[in-house]
Image (cartoon, rainbow, N blue to C red; front, side, top):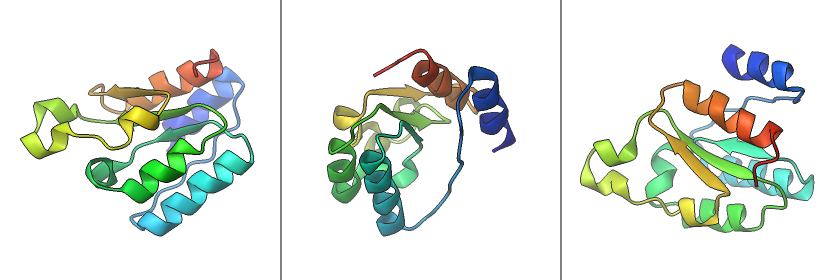
Length: 113
C-alpha cells in the first residue's frame, strides 16, 4: 500500500488504495470511478476468471483501467489463463511482483489509455 501511495506522489497522482473480497463492493467502486472519470489500477484476483459483473462494470469506464497481477497468470494453473476482464481493460500488467503496480501507475501518469 505504501509503495502505491509513494509512487503516486512521485508521479503527481492522488492514490487511494482499497482492498475487498466482496464482489459487489468492488463493482460499486468501479461504477464510482466511472462516474468520476477516475483512472483505476485493479488487481481483480480470483474475480479475473469468472466475474462478469466486474467485467460489465469495467466496460462502462470513462478513464483508463489497468488490470494488474502480482504473479503471471499464464505461469500458473490452466484455469487462470482466462481473464474476463482483459478485453475491457485498457491494458494488463502481470508477473512483476509488486512492481506491477508501479508500472501501472506510471502508465496512467504518462497518459496510458
